[in-house]
Image (tube, rainbow, N blue to C red):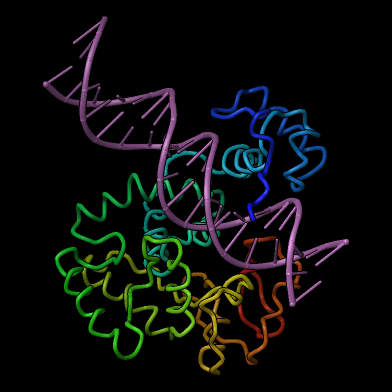
Length: 268
DNA sequence: AAGCAGTACAACCGCGCACTG
DNA sequence: ACAGTGCGCGGTTGTACTGCT
């Protein structure tokens, strides 16, 4: 049972976008807004896949994009968030206005990874490189008992990356999720200290993932912790129900006060 | 100047989830 | 409950650019 292709590949352009194509896309979105990506190319007179249009707009043409080099501060935020979230680029991008997930992902792979390695830090575990092997062995020892205190970083395989990470987050308490940053602070001489506290973003997609089967109160509390701005205290919502911040009318990715739990939440 | 290797980043691809009928 | 569709995400690839020999 195959998936229907997102577009007629035989009649679509591929590769670099021309200025004319960019202009058509910009004009169309200005007039009609974002969305309906599948039908957009035809309506806009573009011989492109809808997905390609969406990507071009989000990663390159959007007017609110901040082009140019990443600042030192942005570097630190990315490193910090990656240590907490792993390869959740879209979530990391949500904390960096004007930056896209693709941009951050590329920047990570080409700059930060190398920077961390050269300073003796494993970019996946955010631990000192020479102790990474020991950490792996330690994790193996946990396999027969409780879930290992794995670093909050997605493993390379996509199939189990999100599930492993989600499982970790779901049962993760604040102190657990801060273990890696704490380690990093010690390892990097304490130059990165954004005081970020974090838990699992309460996205329905994560709640519904195959790995999410938690029902304990502690875990259901932890899944209500959201990405927190620096220096904000993590406060779990008072009830185990879904936080209502999805209904408060925030723009996607924005932060705001949740009237239900009186906390600062990010609308996802 | 030419060739090569390394780097940067735009774009593509496949998959999973949400939504809808 | 189920299948089809659209969208978003993360991983990967392709290619232009840059620096070195």
